[in-house]
Image 1 (spheres, rainbow, N blue to C red):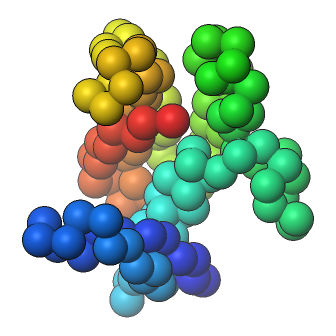
Image 2: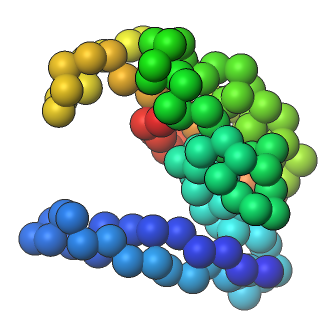
Length: 125
């Protein structure tokens, strides 16, 4: 199995992003593939994918209405929970965004992989 994710390669060029391929690991586990897909879905606009129209969050309507996409993050959690031993997506308290000063919804993603490793990642939406 494989998927693709965008990364910032180094601190010297923070605006230069590139796509990297994530594959099944040598032991046959797909956890990193699914975690990369989960992070990409959190950045995806609802209906943006021609193949998976029910994946993503309504980012533009959330900004206009000033309502965090909690319902859609809950749905993403339900869609991806089958691929991990544990998947918890929880909203962090609103904190002002450093660039615009307005509150930016931020979520903490905690994953226990199928081989028992605990991973946490904070994902801004």
